[in-house]
Structure formats: C-alpha cells, structure tokens
Length: 353
Image 1 (cartoon, rainbow, N blue to C red):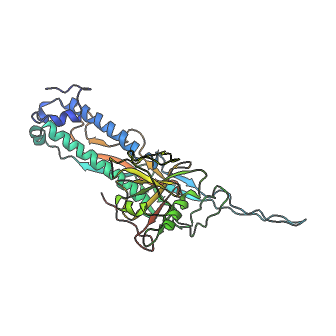
Image 2: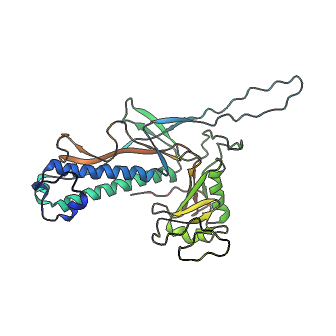
C-alpha cells in the first residue's frame, strides 16, 4: 500500500486502524506529516498575531524620546541644556522546546496508521499549549530577567523586560505630552476584590499612552460574573433578544462558546472571556492604534516552526524528537496592563502547561 501525496491527511490516517506504519511507503507518509506540520505552524503563527509581532531580532532599542521642559526666560536669559533619557535595549529570548517521539522499529511494525496519527496530533497539541504558556509568562509575570542567547553566534546576554514595572526604564511621553515617572509607573496593579474603579484604572493605564487606541480586556470565565456586575459594564445581548427603541447592536453575544467570546464593553475596552485567561487577573492590551505588546521571536533560515529533528534528512521519520525554537519578549512595555484582584499587592500567577 502506498500513500498518494496530496490525497491523504492526518484525518485519513486516523480512520485507518488496520494498516501498520511499516506497510506504507515511508517517504510518502513523511510527506503527509510534513503537510500537517506546515498547516499547524501557520495556525500557531496566526494564533499569537493579536498579541505579538513576528521577528528574528535579538533585541531592539527603546526609550523615552524628548521629555524636556520649555522654561521662561528674561530679556537676557538662556535656556539650560537638558538631558533626555536615552533608554536601553529590550531583549527577545530564543528558547528550544522538544517532544520525544519514541519511534522504534517495533513501533513501526505494530502501530497502525491511526496510532501514528494520534501520536502526531498529541505532539502538535502540546506544542500549541507550550506557545500559549510562554506568551502568558511574558505578559503576566512582572520581574525582568536576563538570558544567554546561545542559538545565534556570537552568544549574547539579553535583558528581557516585562511590562512597565517601575524599574526606571525610560517611558515614552503620552499622546498629549504627558510625562510618566519610570521609577513608580507600573502596569501591574492590584486590589483586594474587583471594583469598577480598579478595573477602569487598569484599562486607562494602557489607553493613556496612546491616541485613539483600541483595547481588549481578557478575563477567565471564573471572573465573568464579577465583571458583569461592575458599574458601567455594557453587556452584549444574545441574538434572540429584541432590542429596545433607539438601541443598535454593533456586536451580539455568542451563546455557543462560553469560554471564548466577547461579553461586553467596559471603560472603552471590549471584554473577552478567553480559555487562556487566568482567574483573578484581568489583562488589557492594545489591538490597534499602537504597537503590539509582545515580540514573537523565531530563528533565522529554515529552523522555524515545529520540526522533526532527523539525523538523516532523507529519512525524516528516523528522528528522536520534534523541536521548536521560539521566544516571547515585551516590545512595547505600555501596550498592556494586568490587574490582580486577589490581594492588595501584585503577585505573579503560577503558570504551567
């Protein structure tokens, strides 16, 4: 039996519970798997697009721009020379993640095509979870760190920053010339319990840095009832509910997906329940009108995406593991803010796969 390239997919393999892997042409089976990997890699790139820009950069310079003061002078006066914060570098990490396949000759002789497909699907699912986990760490964790960038020559120590966290890193002026004290200004806020004032302050913590920016606030489903009870929250109504006189529905509530839907607006931000939202943490981020908060770094050349790491290129199934190299770093430290409602001071969440 030979698989016809272009005719078979993982779905076809899942349906085949009789033929073993050893009975098919290895190269054509590898081609089916590669097509699925290509589709998976395209989907995962799209998945992070709302939060991150794709890049191969190791780091970028960021700073505050000109924040001087225009001073009053007398007839013979001369304005003093003013120094401007020059900023520093934002590092974007590149890490390697792997998933062992455990394929042996005995496995090929005993496993059906359905077994093979389920294993491949499981690996791609775990890869997706890893990407989401690393993106969440980049946003919800508040402490800067350093990492050795060892997968690009020469090796370099990178300073990876979080969102604005009162670390004295220069902050650009606001759209109307507002100045922000970089030693105290933080986009990680907290309160003991959820209040309209606290959540609104967190949304404004982002909006005050931009002119005409659009934002989304991501919550966990466990916090939906609390958000709906906030004074000033405007809910989206279900499609079957008739609107009153003068009401216009620009967006309706999705009643079919409780864990991934927009539920309304608060403080000018659209509130989304997301499956990756963290209980007790409300994340607001820019969706348009400003640079995205994260950079999604990928390696140069043909090392991108989830790949089978075969020792011999012409025999891709003779591999020890799948691998992906990527990393998330904050590229715009004021394009997102996290509000913790579980205590009086911000506490990093525990984030795991």
